Image (tube, rainbow, N blue to C red; front, side, top):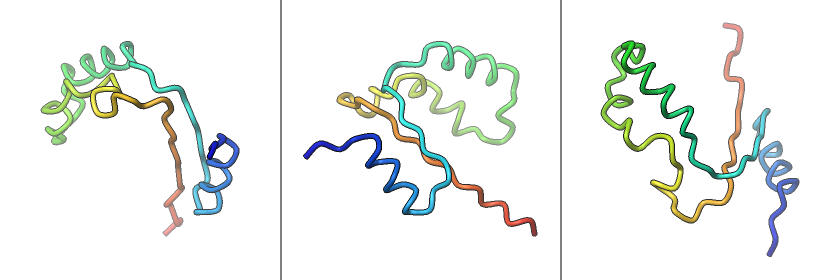
Length: 81
């Protein structure tokens, strides 16, 4: 069965997501370097898990060696209250 990006996006919208994006699964060296700068500036506040797991960031293939694509979804949970 071939799953197209159109089918993935249609399903995500049916599930209630408002934003859907699909990108090629590649290492993100610039973003990893930016994270290092951000952490060195202490901007993670109390989120020590980010600093503790920084070596895992920047390459999706660390977790998923066979990944081809990344599917990202978004939903606005702000209710105005």
